[in-house]
Image (cartoon, rainbow, N blue to C red; front, side):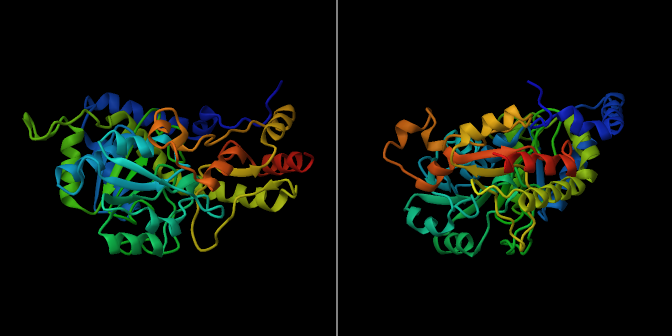
Length: 375
C-alpha cells in the first residue's frame, strides 16, 4: 500500500538545507576540536538569547537536561530524595524519568480537555508538604503557562521547571517570572530537546538547559562534565552528558530556519482547522493570545482505529502521541495503583496526530483534510 502522505520524512525535512549542513559538519571536522569548542559555546549563547535566559548549558539530550536540573537543585540543597514534583499525566515518559531517576517522586495530575496541557486548577489539590516544584510541559508546542502556576509556586515556594522539549520558539500569553513570554525562559529553569524530529532537530541526540540562576547553571555544567568545575577537579559525582561539536554546528546551521519552520506549521494548522468539517473529528484549539509552534497536530477521534485504518487506506500516515498516560506505563503503574486522571485517560484513547512540517504542502494539507471529511 502506497503512503502518499508520510507522517515524517527527516531526509526531506533536511534536504533544502543539505549543503548548509554538510558545510557545518565539514567545518567541525577541519577544526580538529570535537568536544567543548566554539560551536557549543555559540549555540549556548544563541539558545539563551532565544529563550530570554541568562545561561544555557548544552547537554546530551532532553532527558538529561531535565535530570541535571533536578540533580543540581539537590546539590544546592533545594531538593532532597523523596520530594515531589507536579506534572501532567499525558506527557512523554522522559518528564517523569528525570524526576524518579534522581530519587524524587512525580505527582501526576489530570489535563485540561481544552489546552491538552496540565489542568492548572488541580495544582493546589496536588501540593503536599513534600512538593518542591511544578513541571509544566508545553506539549505539542502549546505553552503551558498561566497565573495559577505562578500563584501556586509563589504561595508554596516551589520551583518551576519547564519541559520545553516540544515548544522551542513558542510564546505564552502571560509573562513569566522574569517578564519574558518565551517558553524556556518562563520559569526557574527549562530542559530542551533537539531530537531529530523536533522543530529544531539535530542529526542525533542533543539537548539544552536554560536558566536565569547562575549557581544552578554552574553546577549543572559541572555535573554534565564528570562533575568537574575545571580540568581534573571533580567536585560532584557527575556524568558525561555533554553535547558534541558536530551536533552544535548542525543546530547552529538550522537555527536561522526555526522561525520559518514554526510559521509553516502554524499555516498548516490554519488549513487543517478551517478545512476539516467532519463532526466525528475534534481539531485542536488555536489560542490567539499565544504563539503555538505545533510540534504535533493532535486530533481527537472516538473510533480511532477505524479512522487510522481509513487514513492508511487513503495514503495518509498517522501516529498516536501518546497512547498511554505515564502513570500507566509498566515501570510506574505499581507505584500509582489507585491513580485515575479521567481526562488524560480519555484523551489517550482518542488522540491521533496528522502529518505536519516542511514535508507537507498547503495542497497536501487540503487533500488530507478532504480525505478526513469523507470518513
